[in-house]
Image (tube, rainbow, N blue to C red):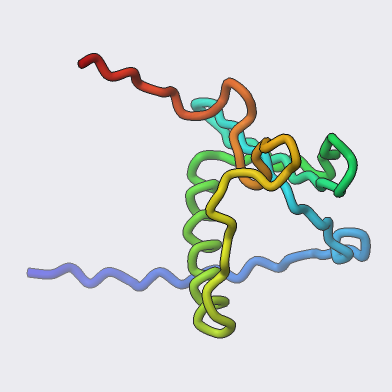
Length: 119
């Protein structure tokens, strides 16, 4: 016997977007870090010829929100690629003259731990 369960309706949440937020922030460099209870995303900008990046926004999220963002972003990328073709990314890590990486990275000491293998 099945119980009749009411279908959950998706709640519409009004979004307020003021003029300053609507301008947006350009970022071409994102640093990521996490703890047991949060993810930190630092959105920065690298300018050619300047050997540092300036963080313009820091977003702190719960792991659940970060995973939801991952799912939504993956879907948006899929739709984009279906409309405009595959997004090409550089295969080699880093394009700076000193070979340091550019793009999505973990903050120093915050990345996945490396496991050593014993032979």
